[in-house]
Length: 429
Image 1 (tube, rainbow, N blue to C red):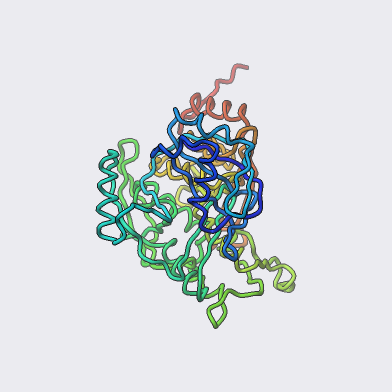
Image 2 (cartoon, rainbow, N blue to C red; image 1 turned 135 degrees about the vertical axis):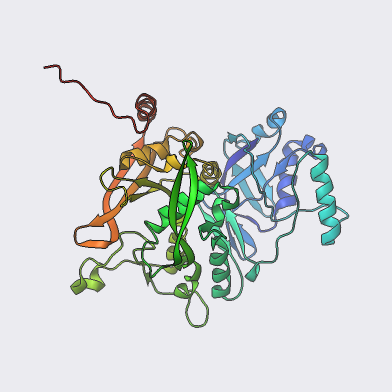
């Protein structure tokens, strides 16, 4: 399990692994004898040879349950790491969850420095631990790109020309698979079933990327799915390219460096950010700093998508995008991955409230909010308006909070009123 300590302090050394372990082992010498304890590097903002701590910086210690008593007493202690001092808060305890892929910035196996012998040694150790997996070394990223994930932020650091790094990162993040479906690397799409992949593709192309100027496709493609024992044909536009893949050129100047001035935020990047009146274009357009616009590019990765299909016009579906209020990025990412094998019917809802509550009450999103906080999300419904038949616009917005009692009532209603069941009441008068 993981014990995660809040930190009070300003900085720690950039390379602080050994000194951090020594500081902890000073309070509990027994740790020197154990090979079952993992002490994770502290994340923050790299700057001039140190890591500047933020309010989201944490110390994470991973160890077996029967050894928790060795490190729990560190709460309230001050650790001297080189010339830097930090104080630990009371730890939160989290159980480990299975993962298909793990990454480590630094791995050291004594006596093995060459890539071939190192990988062979790492593979032997995995097999000795009974872990079925393959160890590999990732290729060098442009600009020595690294990132640090904390519960509230993701910090990127690189060297050299900004355009080269950002262009590579966006093309890695936003891809297209052999089926012509949008493939978001952050969702581990190679592990997601085809039904969910199609739902994500339809949801994104019906909300963020509905305009043909930002989404290029090569005709329609049909896929047969088995739903409740019946075969249904699902059609989607076969993707060729989309705006996210090439947005680095909008973020950088001619010299390839990140722009200093704000840039326009258009509707596909932030749905609804439209110029409200042509005569007042300058006053009503949306602008953001380049780094914030870059962050907005990843909104489709975190959102969830639902379909509202009318009984009278089933050929004209409406799409709803759920934007969660994330309180812990690490936990949310893990829980979202667990939603990768929902069946096709899970993406169909009857209203905005149904979409929000279905998302918030999924068993796998129970840790979306930390204890004593309300789980909340915003839902945006897209549909055609009388004045715009060709393009879907925002037709309804709702902010939904799911308290414990709302969770219970919603789940009871789902059990009592099954999908597609019509209840008719007799007129007793």
